[in-house]
Image 1: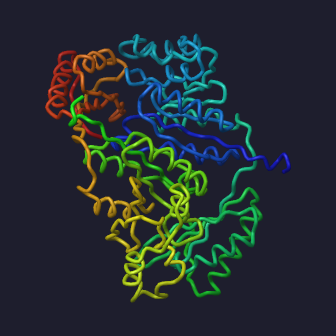
Image 2 (image 1 turned 135 degrees about the vertical axis):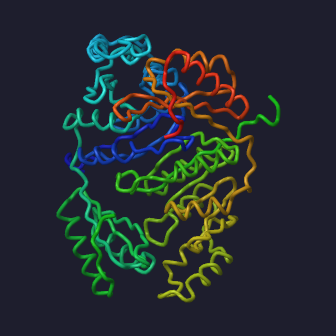
Image 3 (image 1 turned 90 degrees about the vertical axis):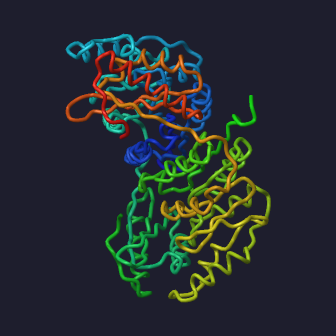
Length: 254
Length: 254
């Protein structure tokens, strides 16, 4: 295997009872996945765990060893159910300390806000000893980097702003390119064609995503590869064969 | 511990490269969670794994042993990337067989549809030996029950119709009741109040979910308990104390 084809992987731990109760719709899996793809890192697995210190710590230790990077979302706010930093410190076997830069950021952020920097808000300056900060351009309280673990907020727009602050800072491989071919083809009719096309083009993976629109069945076929040219060529080949078999093309994408 | 307070738990495995690539937004975690809550079963963890037979089988074996129930979504369609049944058979150490009732269902379903029952479509009658079927009122091809594992479709409206077919069929405990109290209170200002209220009412868990609306900060505080009366009483207590501290109430919920 050539060095440049090393596959970089990451895992994501989504932390929060509100996701597991169904109260809150998770939006972080998709946005972290897309961000990682752009950096040539494959999101290899996700676990959603409750607000339970031991469960978070165990999960973090299992996944940070198995992947190049581990991301977490959720549980870094000011309230009693925000225990991600404590769990992370337990996972790394280090104490929790107040990070002086985080304290300064919070002092500035809350200086002119009602209530000022309360004890509860100061909780958001706590980090596992040895951690670095991830800037939060949205709402002050920073994210935390500890070893290969990136601890982000749970609120999606804040997580997004932390990801933006990390853009270009992680080493990765070649981004995966995807090409979508849509057709008015019930996926079960073209299953053989898809399998043959995938087998004939080593290095691509083809996914099939059916839809039902305007009273008719169809599917989007997504060709993914680290080799953009190969993905494009395979997409053209698949589109041609679908046309030859009489299936009407539709614009790709959702 | 009394028999009636036994905590029933379930895990969910979401299977699919399309979720891990960020292409498709998962909607099944929330709907499975809500359905389980209604049956008095707590969704204790979720794992999202790629279309990889060994990874699926390992994950299934870890989770079906750790919980009363395991649900899976995704990977039971007609195409080459649909390998959930094969992975499940590997996990249970049994062969894959064609289920005669599933074949009959598919024969009926495809009798008057173009193409009829192709080999690809017949793949959807395959089950691990010893499995039962879960009715699919939406689109023919059934779900599969194997031991304590419930294998559902990935397309959310089809998964929903399979859950509906299972309604009332799983043994569970008392459903968790949740009461939401909303206030124009920045959550960091009321962190102590929340912690005290939770500590003073054993058997409840209080979550805090901040929002920013109409130019002002606020939060929804969600009180959860298996004891509906206790949840209600705690909600009233919290609402009263928030009013006493001068925070304007807002309608609960999102």
